[in-house]
Image 1: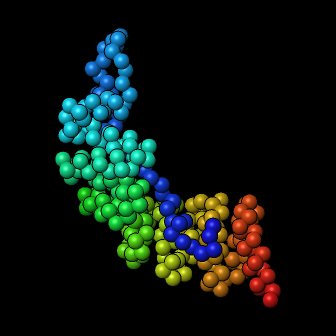
Image 2: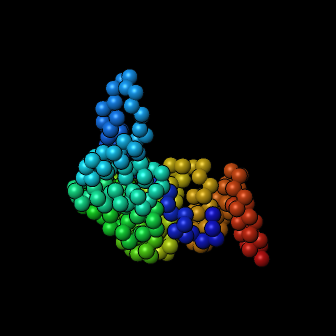
Image 3: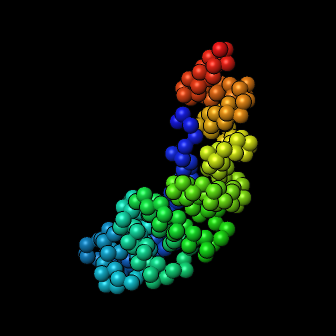
Length: 242
């Protein structure tokens, strides 16, 4: 936990690659081999590469190749495959979403945000896409629009703890202390053992002048093994005694 709430702590949803056809594609890629064939077996990537060599516009193979590259964090290769797939069919929300993940991996946050917004045009009620769009916007310092997307994510994913966590960080940075207090509390109600969130709530409580509550929260996180919380509790007690 850093000395202040920062965007470095926001990304809690993780990269969820939305695979549409990868397993079907891989199965069909090797289906031509006879059961006892003496032909050499190809890896999934080799099978897909052969398909794309024969037909560069093989959409299922493009998407499957992109998904594999994204899983392996080969973001530039994934980007190339997804862009080509979108050139062939721009109506698939998941392909746009995965393209956003590839751009995030390349630290191209403006392009990532654009990809997520394209995904949301096709699927407006996608809570995870709203959250990723919010993250991309926050990294561009566009906190107000990021706030909108995080709020939508929280509405659409009320049982997803990190929807509350991400939104809480953004509005804390925007100075909405009361809102941050409520959202971190909502998150902790869902994940009571997350010491990072407990420390965040303690920090915001201290900023709001709620020292007693902040001390209790720091102590709780300290008892759960968070050494940073122990240090912060001691510092706050020393400051209170002066």
